[in-house]
Image (cartoon, rainbow over all chains, first blue to last red; front, side, top):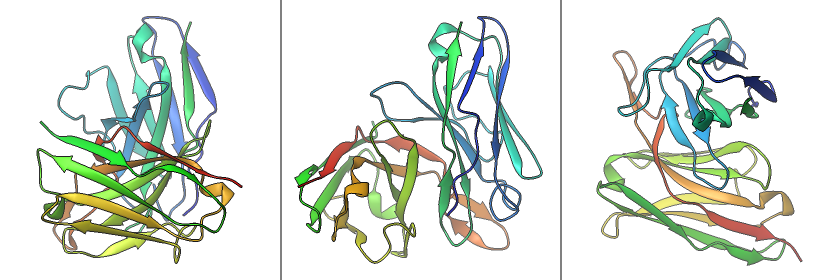
Length: 110
Length: 127
């Protein structure tokens, strides 16, 4: 199971929008609409923010949205808020009931 | 309320064994797809293993042949038996429930959408 590629860091000012990319291959992201995104604050367990590419679990702000094009999935956060500062991870189904995570992206709210 | 509570972590020597437990409440483990995900200190998340409601099990290549996922239905508890431990297995281990996915052609399977997580238990492999 290969790791998905994410930028190490992104930043934005409050109120702005940012996008985090997650690049896989035709064997994972490109083949299945089973990409999820997780938010993790320091010392805490990850929290599901997006699943099946663009679906939001109940209780997650609509400022969070997901999309996919080819082998690359993206997470967009609009109207950045201070509490959005965290690490973000993508995860994709990789076939044969296995999964791969991205390396993680540290979001800094300036 | 759904809750997952891991236990069993600790310090173990290279080559040793450890069994992690994940006690669930608020839902039935045996009716869901359950995974273990780990995170090495200061590093990213790594999927480790999944057990399907039907009992099928799958593993990451990095742990295949050394780790075994299982469950005890009456205790509503998930386990991870870890043998032949290596320094690179040092991590916080989380159990997580998978939302599952239904495909009209292939049926139900785990989706990687982990909607509930435990607080994690730290495993340190060192001499």
